[in-house]
Amino acid sequence: MRILTALFAACLAMTSAALAQDVPGSQEDLQFDSFAKTLNLENPGLEFTYKSGKHQGSSVGFHIAEPGHRKSGTFAPQNTSNNLESEVVSYRLARFLGISDIYNPVTYYQLGPQASARFKAILKKQYESDPDRRVNYLSTTAQLNSHPAWLKGIYRLRPRGQKFFAASLATESGHLNQSHPLASFIRANGPQPSTKPMFLSGVRGARSEFPRPSEKEVELARQLSNILLVDQLLGQWDRFFRNLEAFGHADGRLQLMARDNGGATVDDWEWHSLYDRWLSRYDRKVIQRLEDLASFLRGNDKTFASFDSPEKWKVAVGFLQVGSFNTFKRKLDLLVQKKLPELERQYGTRTYFPLQLSEVPDLESATGQPMVTPPREASAAAASVTIKTDATNGIVETPTVTPPLAPVARSAGDAVAVTPDAGISPPKAGTDAIAARRSQPVRRTYVTRPSERTPDASWKVRSPCEFPCFKTP
View 1 (cartoon, helix red, strand yellow):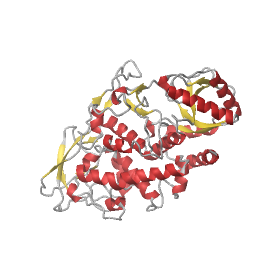
View 2 (cartoon, rainbow, N blue to C red; view 1 turned 90 degrees about the vertical axis):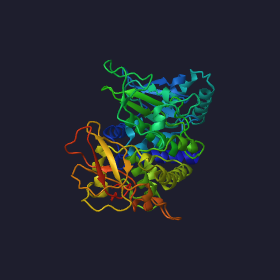
View 3 (cartoon, rainbow, N blue to C red; view 1 turned 180 degrees about the horizontal axis):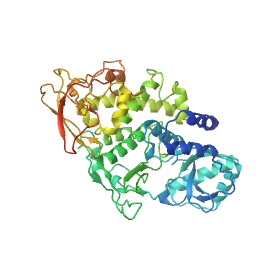
View 4 (spheres, helix red, strand yellow; view 1 turned 30 degrees about the vertical axis):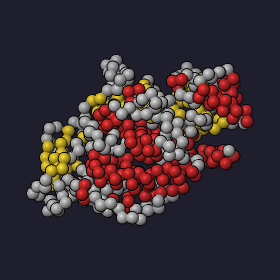
């Protein structure tokens, strides 16, 4: 316990400096970083309200608000339902992956003597009959009795707007509902999601003109895939017990949200195989970043996102225990060294969601090459593909491999075809699978922006992919 307390204190001090300089994030993330530096729950003017009720989870804690204002945040201590490490690492890892918009900002926080005394007084007025909440109530009370002047935990920002449990995606046993269309969209052997709007039952809009918020199937599938991917890497077992939420933006768009990420055991493999059955289709950009991260942690790349040391990255992302970090690395290596190569050999581009036109500038910057190459003679392994683009939604549908055609010239708006699955060679024993896959053509579709095309336009192109796979700056 003393070792963990020391690590927690060190993480409080070290990550604040690291976050200010190195951890990427959106404008909202950076605003939260600035806010967290000035957060002071010792302020007697703040209002504390007990976090109660079965719909608020089995972890105990309290909500924080300024007088006359809405509840803006929640403090929750370490207990059986709230793993501080998984809470913080999930959010910060999402920032490195560019998907923090589907996570609530959270950071480590240690209560001082005044806030600890106030929380203890609040607990004395409560009685918990629910078995899980009572265990956590007693645990928190015991911690405060043991050390009345401090209590370690996390501060989680409470976003504005009403959130709804995505009940249609969950079973009563806390698993992913396999009968829901989104469940099939995130499997490589399932249909590719389209740009058709999708609603979720029970989710109401933020404004009366949008009573039923909606989003494209492909975007909701991406969000769900990204949430479950992070869950698998960090040992989440509590996602479908009311911790997957959805809400409607003011403009009527529907979005998923990973509400609570503390129901996890980072140094554990119990749910890992279950996630393998649920998830086998991924967001290309997220996988690119994870592969670069894995290569960096293995010592093959010298830097990752401005970090030059895996130890510095481990601290900045929030890991507290060596065992947790080592298990995360093993799970990450298993994903990029084994699972992804096997999926690509079996399913090709169906392993990934359709490429978005908005992603092309990033890929161009990553490879240092233009996305359209000069016309060339096609190799025997090359295949032609038929690709449809939706100029309105910016989605490129999964290509269908057809018999090779004669070489064709391409304009600046054309796409680059890719090699078929047969062009992917398994890595040799003892080699780095990431390096092996980067050095050979992989069945992918890269596109440039269409110049003058209608939403129904389609065309055929032919040439092997010449760009290094999963290469980022």
